[in-house]
Length: 122
Image 1 (cartoon, rainbow, N blue to C red):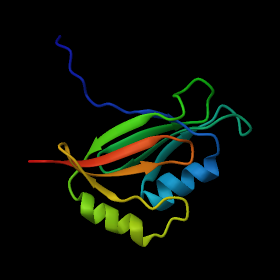
Image 2 (image 1 turned 60 degrees about the horizontal axis):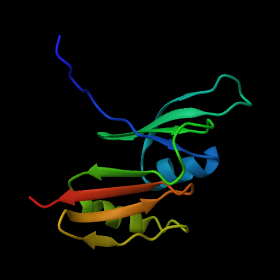
Image 3 (image 1 turned 180 degrees about the horizontal axis):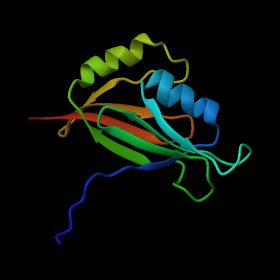
């Protein structure tokens, strides 16, 4: 059997589920695919997604490091920027950035994680 990598799913550390939900679901437009907790008073581990973007969010100590950077390639970065700007999220107003890699929007979540959404140069 040959080795075949299927997908990569970053695990991002979060500390407050209400803030994580407001950022990833309400602002970024992800859906909560599933959540897991061993008990209602224990940390949550969840998967959120929007199209091919899939992220795991963990409140567990030791899962991920605050301040993680994730690079995501997409088409339609201008449209995404306009969508996010229209939401008037009070904690973040990202701009469009252009460099040799392409056009991008960098988002900082409430926990210091950075998501760089980039449309590469063709």
